[in-house]
Amino acid sequence: MNNYTYVYDIKQANFFLQEGLIINYVGIHRRTGRTYFAFDRNQEGLQEAFETWKNNRIYTI
Image (cartoon, rainbow, N blue to C red; front, side):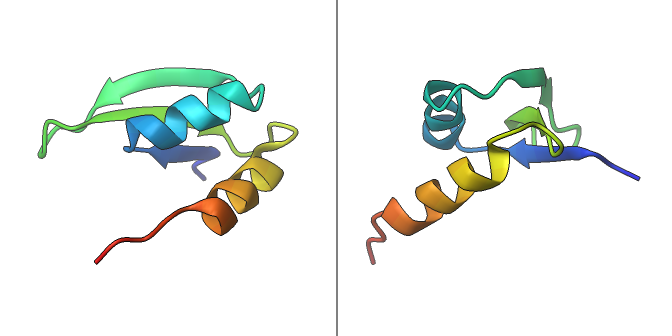
């Protein structure tokens, strides 16, 4: 089973880094060509950082 959380948004990846998380690896999606950042799901603080990101995100229409 996959133990990584993949982030395609550079702003979100930077936020996670500021929260002290570590990127396990960076890759490029084969089909779309988009860059992604892989974070270990078992990393301490990932869930809290994700919740903070989700709750403070500003949505625009």
